[in-house]
Length: 163
Length: 163
Image 1 (cartoon, rainbow over the protein chains, first blue to last red):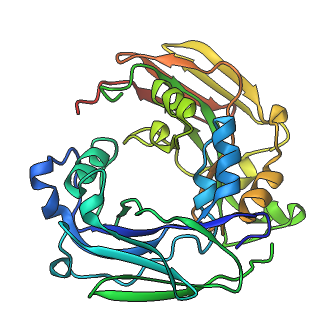
Image 2 (cartoon, chains in turn yellow, green):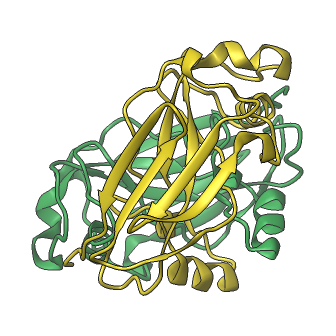
């Protein structure tokens, strides 16, 4: 947690790892571009994002601090069912997020197709796909645990980052 | 120029190529992290950026299309005087931008120091530094020429990109 971040929020997200290069990928073949999955913690300095949004400034920085998007090791494609994969996140053992990919606003094939019409996707790129309800703040000293039900679990401590 | 971009703008910019890894770099030693320079054309889909700004959405995409930030080959450090390096840009031979690094709002050491407090800089990273006045639109069929006075010149055609 950087010293000038007063409000640090967690978002647990499923990450898509691209397996081969592609551009203008049709939705119908998008699943064949998936090389695996990862579990991602999309951390956001919400105060910095909020100020940037108000000014119409770019807010990549609010999600761009060192250590802000830890990801798990690669998860094999056959371990995930996109129809109903359950993601959860706990802070100090208390459940804060508990959702399923069933509730995603955009399907994974739609996301891959949409993004690939803007820029080329390359093997190794990671697309993170949005988070279930329950987003909230954490403070130094707390511990975040997140997982994909039946597949994997990861733990990260929240610490102060001296600048 | 992507088909859903109705307003494509050029911005000629000096790029700083980072020569060694660093984090929390003091301004006083920032120049020692420069490994070279590059001339960059920061192309922006201004209509897409404008819509995103209004909604408070991130606007990386407006600058992120394939082919949107062509850069020159590496320019050696001793070829550039940061006090007064002249950048220019012409569209179809007509001068549109003609500025100097003397007019930069933030100095290069300030930029390097500021950014390195947000995320680690790595050798090979490129920082583009903002553009002089005279930003404007181009259309397919036009040709952009840009240069650093006395150092180099580069030419790019504007073409339609089928999506």
